[in-house]
Length: 166
Image (cartoon, rainbow, N blue to C red; front, side, top):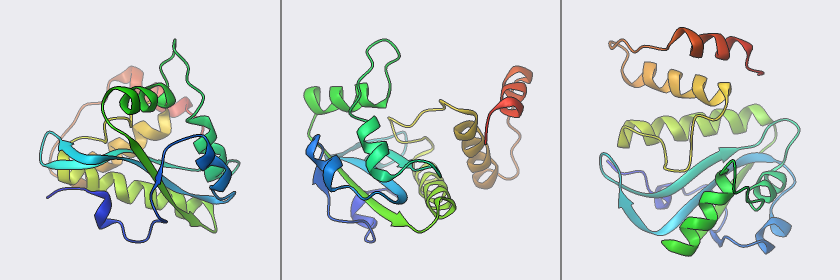
């Protein structure tokens, strides 16, 4: 099975990724996705989705999209990779869905990531394990998808997860 943006019918109209989009983005909690014009191969199947994100209680969709415009060369954040993909590979579009509460956005993000991992055996290419929260999400996804399989988290990683905020 493939995870493609065309399956996500409850998102707003897709818009070309450029700075002006931030101005039209809602100042509410929600999820947001970036996609390329053409599907590309994954470990299993094809997808056009390159990133799935959500807001926190203090941040809005507009805030998060603004963050993704701030390229950091040294740390190579998501904005850095979005810019490279857009310049070197293909144009990127963005869409979103709002939620009344941040918990709704977090649940929706978790569900989309779970489906993506189930379909492709990997996360979208620009999602990464940058925080303890994301590591926990990945761990939960693995457990749900492979309930009878053991996987190993190092002692150091477990200790970092315990100290991670959220």
